[in-house]
Length: 213
Image (cartoon, rainbow, N blue to C red; front, side, top):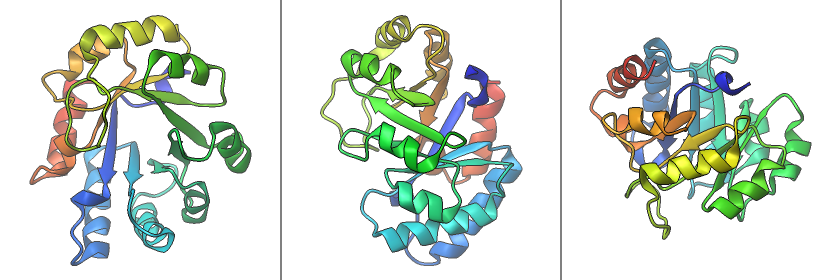
């Protein structure tokens, strides 16, 4: 069950996308990442309107054909369905995971985040396919007031989660630190800026895939 998720969980944040030539950029990026071997991508846009997010999502879906890449949308279940995405990632304050599962059905992905060990325990009994947790290290990509938990925190989360819950470690992770995080018990590492703020994101993804295979 746990191996459906690639070890690298790339997150494309809308802040990495230029406003000029947006459609062309997303189409080109999607094609390049597909050629690089990507098998899962989350698109995160915290500030765009539903129409703007849907437009972006449809470009990504067209560039990454269903069946080759699983696409996950942050927050917005209705937009994910309209765009033909494979699932959603919902956090505290978003639609509850149980409601997301009802709307998406059993065949799509529902992921969530746990900012504490208590939240992890609560989510383990819910209808989620994975739980992201962190921050592992300090990060500027996503605003959070939580203190980094480090490698020892990864070990604690795995101990609580047991062997069945899929854990995705997030925040501040680099290619140098990723192996130790996986060794400590994470099933995957979520990576945003470390891939998508590079001059050649596709080449960077390939480096991650080679290192963590």
